Length: 375
Image 1 (cartoon, rainbow, N blue to C red):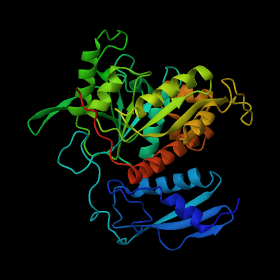
Image 2 (image 1 turned 180 degrees about the horizontal axis):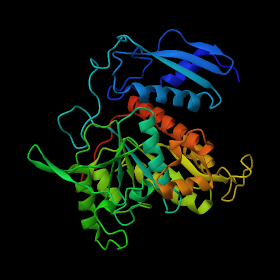
Image 3 (image 1 turned 45 degrees about the horizontal axis):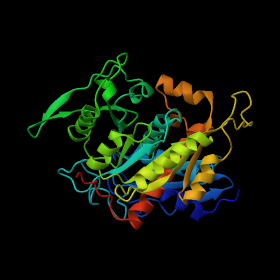
C-alpha cells in the first residue's frame, strides 16, 4: 500500500476536538511536519497548554483514525507541542448540550441503535459503538432503553452499581454511572436482575422518560440509545421525547433477520417519524475460529446486510465477525473495541469513525429531526 500525505490528513479530519464540532485539521492542530517513510507516519499535534485535558485522548483518537481509515498496519508516531493553534479550543463556541434543553446551546447527536428482532447482537454493537466514540475523543452517553430485558449493566460489569441522585437547581437528578469514559444508565440498575419486570407499556414509557429527562447527563457530543428489539411503545416514546439524529440498524445476514431489519428501517423512515438511517451493521458476518484466524465460515449466509444496504441505498457501516472473544468480552465487561489491535476491536472502532462521518454528512445535508407530536 502506498501512503501519501492527503490520505493521512483526510483520516485526521474525522477526529473532532470535544465540545467544538470542529476537527483537529480545521482547528490548525496538525503541525506542518508530516513525514512518511514506507508504512511509518510521524507528525505533531499542537495544543494550547501542556495540561490540556484532551491531549492524551486526541493523540489516541488520531492514531485510531489512521488505523481505521488508512490501514491498521501503519506505524504512527505522534509528538505533542504547546502552541496556540489557529482557533483555540477554549475560544471556540461550546457545542453539545443537555438532552431536553438547558444552560448550553444545542443538543447532542442522538443515535438510536436498533434491530428488527432479538439475538442479533444489537446491545453488543451499541456498547462498542459508544466506547469507540469515546476513544475518538467525544463525550458520550449510553442509555439502555430495553426496560424488560436490560443488558448494558452486564456488558459493562457494573450490575451492582449504586446509582445516586443529587439536588441540582431545585430538581432531584439521577447521576449516571461512568465506565470507559462514557456515562451509562439502565433500568437494570434499579430492579432485581432475577425478577421479571411486569409493567404495562405506560409504566415502562414513564420509567424511560425519567432516565432521559431526570438524569444529569450533562454536555454530550453523542447520546447512544440501545433500543429494544422490534417496534414497540418504547420506540414511540423515544421519537416523541427526543429529536433522534439518526438510526443504526443491526442485523445478521440470515434472511429471517433481514426481513425484520427492513421493518426497522421502515419504522424510522415512516413520514410521521422521519428519522434518517445512518447505515446498517452486519453482525456475525462470518465465524472465525481462534486457531484458524484466516478462515471465514459464513454460517448465517453471506453479505445479506450488504445487499440490503445496496437495495435501500444506505451505507453499510460495518461487517462484524463472529468470534468467541466478543461473547467472552461482553460477559466479562470488556467490550471488544477496548483492544483495537484485534480484527473485531478494529472493526468496531472503524464503525464508530464511520458513524461520525455519516452523522456529520446527515447534519450538513438534512434539517434537524423533529420530535414526533402526540395527538
